Length: 121
Image 1 (cartoon, rainbow, N blue to C red):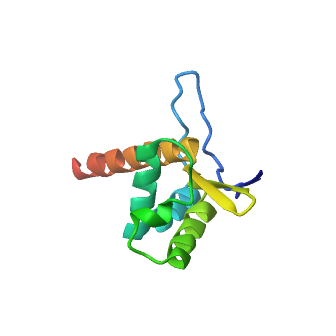
Image 2 (image 1 turned 180 degrees about the vertical axis):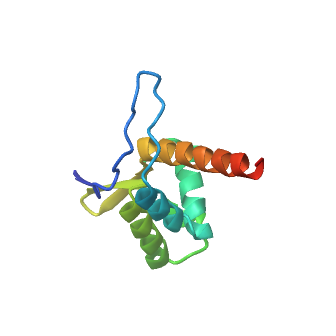
Image 3 (image 1 turned 90 degrees about the vertical axis):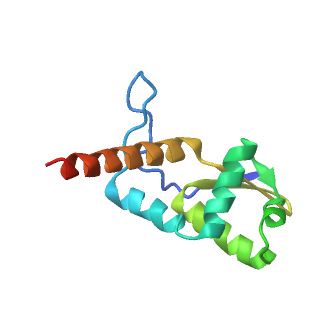
């Protein structure tokens, strides 16, 4: 089995003993926002989070899209680092990069809190 990793999880580690992820740098945050900029990719991420495991070849069953279109969406998600894939012969398996997803979520929380703080002034 071969694992494909984009290596683009910069600044997405666990920073302290509390288990709280570091916020992402702006470039990584923007890359993930772009990757989530299509409803089909959002649905893929929601599905992968809901099954809470890697799934192989069944993603096309949850979307009313051609296999080639689903593959293109998965490619974009993998390039962002948000989805990881493994190849085992002809099968590809996909799962959410939980560490990066949690860092993205933390960054989004910080982003919206910052926005709310600016609105109070």
